[in-house]
Image (cartoon, rainbow, N blue to C red; front, side, top):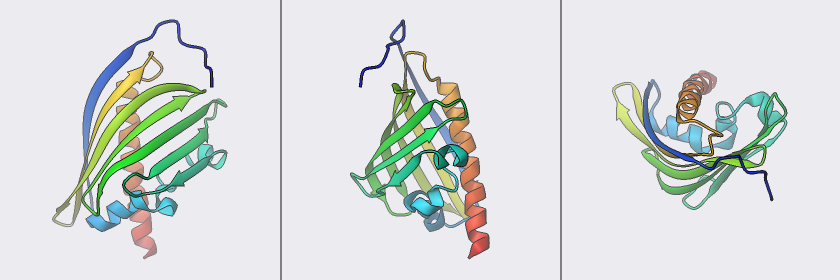
Length: 162
């Protein structure tokens, strides 16, 4: 696929760490990443995803793909590959994102789940390379914080259904 390159090429490197504590056992938090039906509840914009697709092969070497059409009509993709998975404890994955057919970032991330009294402490670390000014570290961190808040709400909803 040929895309029109931005006028200037650039890379912006950034690392951020986000911590959350959920009132759910590590196996329930882990399942929210491993099970597509649960992940659809919190990962991605539900309206945008309904106009796109989401697939998950959650295993070492497996992949995940989210294709969305945003409200402004632009296409966005998230393509990930799982590098390391320790059940109920850790996930390491690499992903890239495109918008309108142009790659906007490449990232390696880890998610650590630690049991704490009454729940799970999640520690997410992302090392991102943001390309050509098309994405910014602050935007990614804000978006990731929102996703982790949505994860908490999805965990609560799944627990209420049990």
